[in-house]
Image (tube, rainbow, N blue to C red; front, side, top):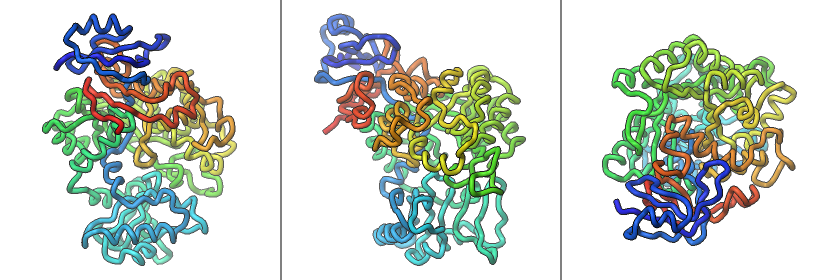
Length: 522
């Protein structure tokens, strides 16, 4: 590869306390030199190709530490119920989308939120049957922890009145014992196994361009083995343009161990990540595992999707094989038990265990996370999306909720992501949420629990170097210094100097991965 010099820019290397550089030289996909233009051009030599960034700000490539790229890719062409405000509106959108599908096709998408419907309504299979009597329909809720299915989908999944509730899940039933079409947590797994797109490679090829346009240069994907196979095909054909750290589904752990997979295995385009394990559900579905019942739901403390003893067994199996663990935990009891399980298994050199979401913790558990070296993989927009829900269901409790400042102060490593398609994958929305703790309209004034805000520089670090650290890749990604991978963005707003509102409106001008321009603003 020829040497390139990217010049005429305010280059933020990501190193604390360093002034902006003017130019950056790239050779063989890595940073050769960064600094003043004269010194960088001298290091690059007279034959270097010059690329003018026209005064843009440059920051390290943003790294989404928790994203479902297969689900996101599928959502780009699926029905979107996120902003539907009633059951009737949701059904109208489903009906319109179904009209464009071929006979026998599955209808995917969803992301419905019945908490916001007016008038209040409980979705069920009969409502779906009224607009889709023959096409199978399976629609995850906005948090992804409940699936709304019609009769055709239930039939294909083999779920009927005689089907028992699985461990860690619930088949919601009517007064006669018949399934209503609402499947919570592990009860939805049979349907999820059927929700496989035959053209996933093509969908991911399209989705990666959308992610590059948002400024993402690396992703930690949380989806399944079909997604892994599709990414490997893209890599082998030279079509992969962003870097993938690929999680192992819990259901595939034993097979992955037998195959000899281990965390960090691979190359700089595709590496094996941790095994993803669910400890509990989600707040919106009333299935996150809490130490006290939800307000207004006095017999419900959520669902322990994976019992504690099984957590310990799985952690030990993974760690002994050289596989790190990433555990979904949202409720305070779930987080407490996960930390207990990590402590019981002990430290394995070279592995970084994580808690995904880590939304509501007992304050004393922050110090325990830090002592054990457990990374908090968090999604800032979840906080601003959930403000009303938290105030309604968890008010008055002594909890560290979305406690980014408390975690940093305690010494917990932070890694930021989006959880797309649960939230939009725009990383600048995450930076804004982390720095303001307000919705995009500026409410609540001053921020929700503002003492937990981060500086913009801290938020950027969590979305770059922090995510790289969580994946054990901090020696290659996250800062723009000689020897590091040349992954960076040119943007129209300098996030280190502009107000958070301007950062929210950032336009990505150029995305560079491995020293090559992978996306350019039209």
